[in-house]
Length: 326
Image (cartoon, rainbow, N blue to C red; front, side, top):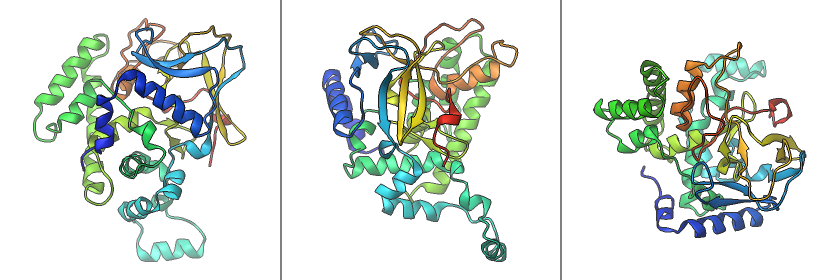
């Protein structure tokens, strides 16, 4: 399935119009951010980011996102039941009928039936595509998703399945971005991602909403809320990365709150930390750096710069214990 036209059409809309539409949509949907807004500006490290509109004090809740706006498997199944039914049929049933019957008697679920975390990438992708095609309220947000890095370019070319040249070009581009990361480790990270992509297409194509491009983009915008729950959060996923973030995420009373870690002046860009690239000894970790490069297009070195950012999102959090766990 190709990416919906609503997703591609956003390239024809001016940056200022996109920003205004998204900020207005957040307000209409119950996302509270009275002192922050999305801006497309050269002042952003990625060209587009979230900025304060007035001074913020330490511990202030800068942005509050209600759970019902999160793109999760549960919310997707609730809002888009037709897709949920298609996705259930795509899940493997590896247990034999006798084993499933015995598990039912013992009131135990098959591991493969109960582990949502094994399918979140494909299922959230399907819900995102369906939201665009049906003009679901999520569509205003999802239509503005963007990823611009060598891995996304590789996936968008669609020739990697039968031609190694695009992979070589992506590896070369990554090497120029991050020359300190061994190319064989970057190649391994690319290989893992492409292997996942191959399995995804084989299982879901022509059975549920499916798009390689959307799958790659969504994967870079998602965050882990717990060991079993992964989500994409509107407004959160517009915030760029820094190794010195000024926001932290917590979950309180049904809302995802982004709290100021320090005083933040007006017109300052807001940042989250996607992941750490050091080991237990505090040294730069090549494996983590390679993964960060392929996952988000963020280059690092043994002496990483304070700020680096694409328009995408992380799977790691500063305070997992305070987040939703079920």
